[in-house]
Length: 205
Image 1: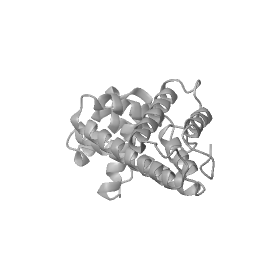
Image 2: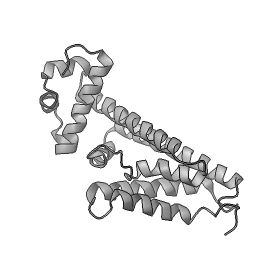
Image 3: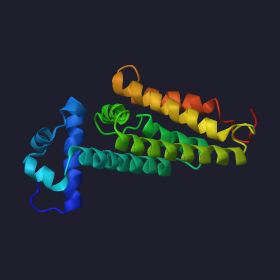
Image 4: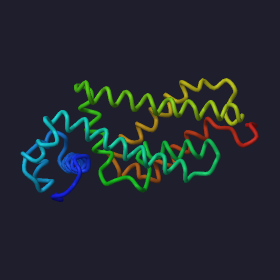
């Protein structure tokens, strides 16, 4: 660990060490001493930046969320202007179908998701993040409706909820059976799902 770094950078380094331990051994193994060993530092140094493991967990999930959000933004910006393609690009990142995904990210996400069921702070962050995803998907479907790219009677709120659930399911499958559902499979399945909703350009079936 570098001797000279600003506090925020050090906190991110500690969070990265936690994520590395979770990817290798699971969340239960991510004790302060184990994180310190991963970091090549003392437990005292870790505790200088985080008063408790809970504080570190919350910071780490926020840090991971920021990294994923940056990849979503980059993927959407790299896509063409078609609303279906942009929606596919962003959701492919969340479905674990993005080639820039960090090693083991799906397992890390799944570990935090399981802990969130009984951890109020993690659950609050998961719920807030999921709500933001649904709102963005709903906005995309509403735009598509204005452009006559989806059926005029499409319930955009339910469509957003269903799309998020589908992407989450792909992410879980990728985390547990990556040999069955590859990154390319995740992207293809997501494309097939969206193709059942979107109409060809011009709004005609």
